[in-house]
Length: 93
Image (cartoon, one colour):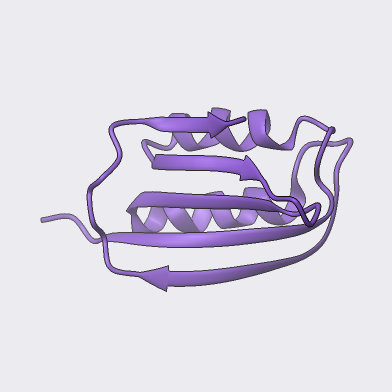
């Protein structure tokens, strides 16, 4: 079986209202990652993603940069066991 994992990322900075969720969603789908991205009330963005570790590492690098209009100040990454509970990758509004 492939090396699967699950991560939760919290992204801080100017990451709401700048296309960040769409940017992450596009790249997650392109990388074959399942999960979701959503804005949180504190102004951060939360990403929960499951997939192959190599793809998750690529998504982490993309989250560190964000789209051109974003400014990422900090990201926190939490690793956990793969659960396989998502069918696709979604933006939660």
